[in-house]
Length: 306
View 1 (cartoon, rainbow, N blue to C red):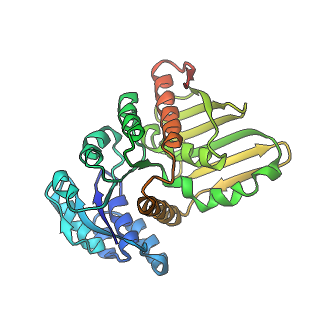
View 2 (view 1 turned 45 degrees about the vertical axis):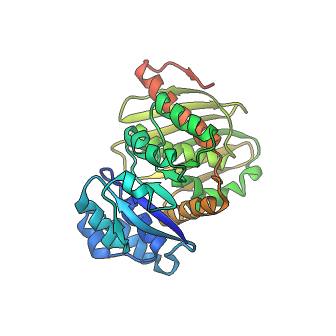
C-alpha cells in the first residue's frame, strides 16, 4: 500500500478534500459543504460506487492552517496531521501538492524532491521561467516530478480523440474557458495538447487584455489555434476542432472522472517508479502558458518558443 501525503490548500481549490476522498473511498459531505464546496460533495455522492483507489491511501495531511488540515482529515479519514513539510517527508511514500498557487510550488516541493520522494504538483506547475527551470533541472537529474491539469484525462476529449482522423486535415482549433489565464489557462492548453497528441508549439501571441484573455498559438504542423479565457462568462470549458471533412465540439463537464483518472495515473507511476506522463510534455505546456503572459506584458508581441 502506497502511503500518500496530501498538501494544501490554496484559496478556492477543493482538491485536497476531493482527491483525498476519491483515493480513500470515503467522504464527509457535511464537512465539505461547511468548507464551502457543495459541488464536490455532489459529485462524490453521484460516484460513490467508484470511490477508492486500489493500492494507495492518503495517510497524512499538511496545510498552512491546522483547522483546514483537520477538516481534510475528517473528510477522508486521514490518520495523521503533520506539523510541517519536513515531518511529512519521513511519513509517506509519495505526495500530492494540491495547491494551485504556482508561486509557492518550488518552496513546498523542494523538501520532497531533495528527499527523492515522488511528487505530483497541481496545475500550473510554474508561472515563471525561473521556477520552471528548477523543476526541469530536477527532472533531468532523475527526480520524480509529475504535473498536469486533469483535463488531460477528460473522457469527453478522449472520445473525440478517437475520431480526429475522420475530420480530415485540421485547419483550426479553438478553446473557451472561464477565470484567469495564470491559473486556468493550463486547463485549456492541457485539453488541447493532449487531444492533438502533444504537438510542438512554435509561437504564442496574446491578443486580448487581462481578464479577457485571447491567445493564439501556432504549432509546428501549421495548425492555428485560439484560446479564450474570460473572467465573467458563464462557467464552461469547451474545445472545438475544425477539419476539412468535419468538426467536433467538446463540452468538458465530468470533473470527477478526470480527477480519478489523473490520480490513478499518478499512483501507477509511483508503482512503476517513473512518471507515466513525460516531463517534456508538461514543460511544453508551461512554456506556452508563460509565453502568453510575456506577450500580454509586452503589448501583444509574438513570443517564439524554443
